[in-house]
Length: 112
Length: 112
Image 1 (cartoon, rainbow over the protein chains, first blue to last red):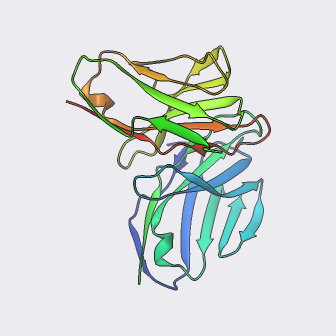
Image 2: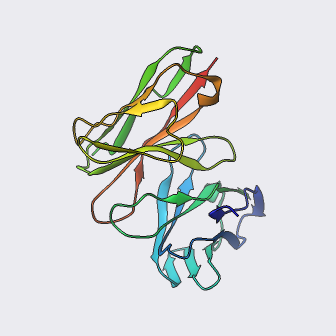
């Protein structure tokens, strides 16, 4: 079993849809969870950062962590064509210095 | 701040040649990383550094070397390039205090 699993997509939705992106993981030591957004031919940029279980909201984006199920989600409300990108989940066992374990990324396409 | 800069943006290398990918950050970050990204494969860690003079191998270090003589610079050296090293290379950096990694724009390398 891979350490982090993420459906590569592509996921195609119409503008205004609610999008759900997910990752599962196997390492119970992971406590810090991140979502990076990567536009085509660009470097990834941090979108959301959460610690342990629970929800975190930032504008149209909500990150959810369920450590008991080893499952994390990113919800995008009122999706826009500008949200079209690849979304990578990443996780780490500790704060400060730590290498991140990335999922393979899910490509999202939002059509106008 | 320019953040993380990488040069060159693109390069074509012949099999057996060597080259150095440059990475510089101006955020005074202690930690720096090199990743490669292949289509549908996510980000694989090649090497990382926790400070000047200290480097360590990541998941896929074979065929690469690094050095860290200053806080700002973290060059990646490819020796005897092989077609399997065709990829997009990203450099990243992070501070002592949290997991957020800041990525450069990437170098697209083709080995023919």
